[in-house]
Amino acid sequence: MYFLENLGAELRSALSQYSTLELEPLWEQGGKFGDFSTNFAFQAARQLKKNPMEIASFLRERLLDRLSQKITVEVAPPGFLNFILQDEGMLQILREVFQKEEKYGYWDYGKGIRTNIEFCSANPTGPIHLGNARGACLGHVLSNLWDAVGYDVTREYYFDDVGTQVDAFVLSIEARYREHLGQPFQFPENGYYGEYVRKIAEEIASKYGSQLLELKEQERLKVFREEGLTIMRAQHQRTLSNLGIEFDVWFPQSSLKEGWLDRALSVLKERGYLYEKDGAIWFASSRFGDDKDRVVIRSNGEPTYFAWDIAYNLNKVSRGFQIIIDIWGPDHHGYVPRNKAAFEALGYDSKNLILIIYQIVKLFEGGEEVSMSKRTGEFLTLDELVETVGKDATIFFLLNTGIDSNLDFNLDLARERTMDNPVYYLQYAYTRALSIEREAQARGKKLPEIENISPTFGEPERKLIALLALMPQEILKAAVTMTPLRLANFAKDLAGEFHAFYHDHRVLGAEEKVEISRLALVKAIRVVLSNILKILGLSAPEKM
Image (cartoon, rainbow, N blue to C red; front, top):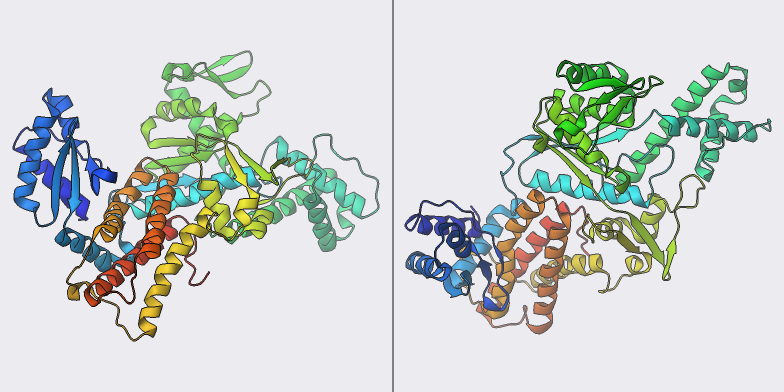
């Protein structure tokens, strides 16, 4: 158990002497009032209809009886408990970091529950662009977080290889192929004009020459479809791999035609949730809280996009996934109620279908917004962005705003290698800790083991050690609330405190006991920052 986990158990034990009420304490940074703070007593008082100060004072007395060597406890209105670390408590926290090393901050909270996280899933009609990239980075880090807290995570990419957009993409390739061979061509009205389409056509021409012109139209278009989609899938895989994102499953939408749509609609029909109107088949989603019923099969016999979603979710459940998480762009906002309704109508608990909608990304350079359009080709691809600002800045900047808010990506700031760039600021804290350890070794000093430390800690060290104790809780909160930004913000706080500590306090060359204690702290900070960087999908550079 972690330090704050143990402290929470002590709080619950103390409360049990007052009431049978069961609560879980929520920890926050204490600020000027202490190292940690919780409104645990206030929560209890509200439910018990008691004076919160009375309960807080009761808990304080019980805790001091047992923990006085590790912490001191203060009570503040309207019932907050503030905790201040003592040397023994700080030593215990460092001991936990040293013992767990690369697993510090990890949990068994998820208990191996099989979880499918589907994200990015960019339309294969073009390269992955900045809007898709936000979903890619959110899904990547959220998957890492859920891994870290004990879920069995499968990362999945839904390769949307059917539909009218893909048809237009295929016709665009054919037009460019004909153009490349000097043949008459007609570009489709809703086609894709980007240079990438021309390159795909040229690659196909180099493989087949002009022989595709001899095929019947249906056979020719089949080749363009297969070759074009194969090229785009490989490109998407390379692009995401350059960000450190790897998927366990690439799921083609076309595979749902192998009976999954029929199975899903059969279940809904058997349960009485489908009906016919105006020649179309409707799902009675309003019976599950949606604002209206939804078409699943159009009057022309074609399934709607929503119908494929229903089949896809049934497929995921059939593969044994207990929790399904989908991360979608803002254009999918209206699909949330209907998909949860259908999931429930299939006979599953809609709480286990989690649909996350992120907002749009706007790119700014030189103070001006850069426009993006896949059809005209006037857009910044994810490959170009990574080449311009690097993998780490791409990920961090795309995490650096809440999911529910539009994100302004400052290309100029992301390029900077200065302390104004938040990802540089964070990584430099790790590099600084590592360089202190290396310098100590270069001076012939053996890095301290926790067993050999007689702690000499003061106010600056205590603030940092308190943050180390909070780190596991922050990882758990970021995972459970599905807010990677929370961990990113915590990482910046820790980096900021460490930079300030380094600026104001000597580590090497301090009095011997102080030096040993501070070297132990630096090692712990390096371990914690390394673990955070890994979860955030960022590199831990040895030099900067």
